[in-house]
Image (cartoon, rainbow, N blue to C red; front, side):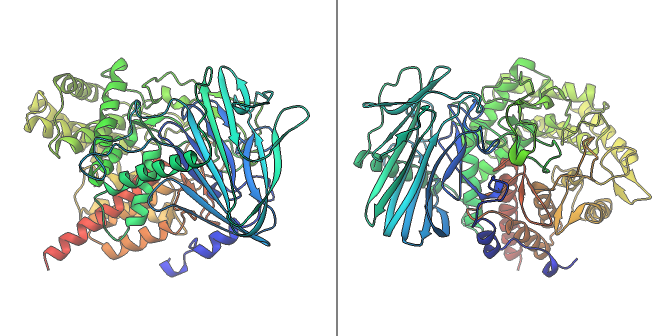
Length: 640
C-alpha cells in the first residue's frame, strides 16, 4: 500500500472529532490531556472536566473516575456555555495545560496544573541538582485551575463531585469558612478553596454553580488533598498565580536540560515531559501509564491496570533519559530497578509498584460500569505471576546503557547481575508467557530466547570491561547454544521468516527487535525476510499489530500497538532506509491527539486512541526513533 493511500489523523480531523460531546456520554480517550506532579496525575478532557485522578499516588484509589463510570465515578468540571470552538495546548515546553473556549459571547482561558515548588537557583539559570525529590514536594497535593475571561462575557458551569475509593464512597461535603468545601474519606481530606460562588446540593453530595465572567475577570480553584488533618490551605489571589509561575519555571528549567535539538524537537520534548510525569519522584520508578482499564477493544474485556512499573521498559527508558541528558532520572530508574528486585534476587518479577512491591493481586471493581460500558474495571495485575524471560536481558541492557556512558556499578549490583546470568543459564530452555504477557499459556517465544542470548552477551561485554566476574568461556558457549537453538527452531523455511514462537507459524512485531538487541546485523537476509512477513501479516493502515487476532487467548481483536510501528521505523533506520523510516515515523506521529499525547493502541480504521493513556512505552519509542534518525543522518552527512 502506498503511503499516500493511508488514512492519516490530520489536524482538521482531530478538531472535528472532539468538538462535540460523545453520544456515549464518555469522551474519546484521545480527547484527554495529562497534568501531574511526579507523584500522581490527572486526565483533563477538552470540555474542562477532570475525569480521572488518583491521590496521593498513581496507584491510589481514584478520587475522580468518571472516565470509568460517567454516573458513579465523580468529576470536577469547569465548562463554558454555548461553546463554538475549543483550542488546547500546553504552555511552551511545560506540563501546564491551557484550554481556550470560544463561545457565542466571549472567550474563556482555562489553565490547569498540579503545582510544584520553585527550582533551586544556583549559578546557572537551572541547576541539574535541582531535580524533583521527595523533600522538595509540598506536603499537600494541589490542582490549581484558573478560569479567566479574555474577551467578551462568558457563562461557565462548575461541578465539583468527588467520589473517593473508585466511586464507592459518596462523602458528605461541608462549607468550612477556613478550608473551603471539604469532605473526608478513609483518612483523606479533600478541600476545594475558591473565590467562585458554589452551592451545596441538598444531600451535600456535590457542589455546583453558574458563574458569569467579563473580560479581565478570573476565578481561581485550588483543590488539595491531605492525609490526616490539613496543616495549611494554599491561598488564592496573587499567591496562587505565583505558584503557577513557579511551576512553569520548574518545567521550563527541566525542559531546557534536554540535549536534543533535532527536527522532531516538539514531539521528543512532549514525550520527555510525559515520561517525567510518569516518574514517581521519591523512588525514581517509572509507571507504564497513569490509568487502569481503558479498553484495548470496546466491549471485549481487554482492560488492564498499567499504574505500575514494567521491567520490560527498562533499557529503552534508561537509554532515552540518558541520551536526552536526563542523567539523574536515568540513574535513579536503574537504581530503583536494582533495589526493587532485591527481595526476589536473582529471580525477578515482571512488574512492581513504585516502592518495589510485587504483591499486586488482580481484583475487579464490580460497581463500576467501565469506560463506555466496557467492563471489567481491574486493579492490580495478574501478570505479576507470569514468567517473562526477556526481563533479564532488559535489566542487563539498561545497565549496559549506563556503563557505556561511563557509569559504574557497585559490588553488590555486580553480584546481582552475575546472579541473573546464572538464572538465564538455568532457565533459557523453558517456555514463558512472553513480552506481551498473553494468557494463552507458555510457549518458547523467539523474542524471549533472543533476550536470553542478549543477557549473556551483555554480561560478557561487562566482564570484558571489568564490571562483573563470570566464567567467560562458559557464558560464551551458552550464548552460542542459544543462537543455534533460535536459528534451528525459530526460523520457518516455508514462511521464510522467524516466527513468534517455536513451531508456531505466526508473525510477532517483537521480531523486529532482533537486530536492535544485537542478535542480527543490518542486511541479514533472514531478518529482511522476517520484516516482509511481519508487514504482510500484521500491517493495517500503515500501523502494526503485535500479533495476529486472538493469538493471546482472549476474545475479540485489539487495535494496532503504537510501539510496534515505531519498532518498524527503528528497523528501517538500522537498515539505512532513512526515507522509508521517516515516512513510517511521520505517519505514526499523525495519530497523536491535539496536544501530542499517544495511547497504548490505535484503532486502525478510525485513528481512535485505545488502551491506557498516555502510554510511556509509546512515548519512549518516539524518542528512540527521533534520536536514531538524527544519529543516522548525521553519520550520512559526515561521510559525504
